[in-house]
Image 1 (cartoon, rainbow, N blue to C red):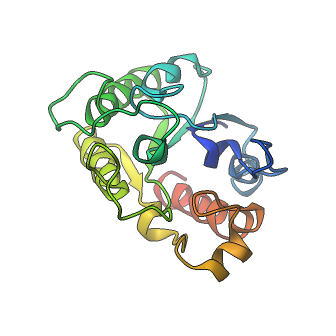
Image 2 (cartoon, one colour):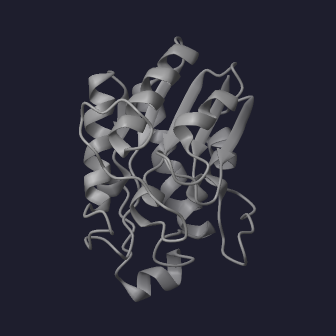
Image 3 (cartoon, one colour):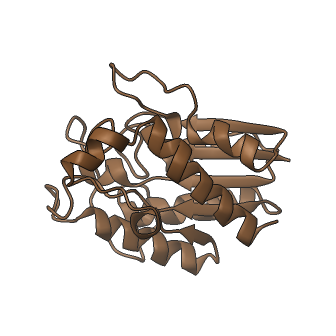
Length: 208
């Protein structure tokens, strides 16, 4: 079986140091835990769902067509990027990539068409240390989480709610010292001990 993992720096495996990749991002660990033949990592640092930087609603088309499992972990940069012009949250009925809601519709419908027989699921962002402060467009990370859940539900796509189910205690300095690169990015220990096993368990419970 083969898996495609679409995402941002959490999927890429950002470990600081100017954007370097950790040795074992969660897609690498999922290959072992799920005994898959191949797992492809389509994580890009700073990637947004909607218009912003390397938007996923466009680049999903570049992923390999042959996949039995497809995951999407996204939303943090739509809320928190400051170096680029991020999109507004928008409304549920939006259908274009210039809002988070609209881009989610494009992404969900496109993935369903591209992978009609695959197990497709989304993951909500991990908590970050700027939450619950609204961004410059007035929405929070939890607003992005709710958008992901609502749009995915309308396409009957399962969602693993990392925001609540895999607690990244971004506001606790001791926790970040042990498990974080910073208040936005988990380190290798968190990925190995908490994130990857939780994702693997979700896949087993909902697919295998």
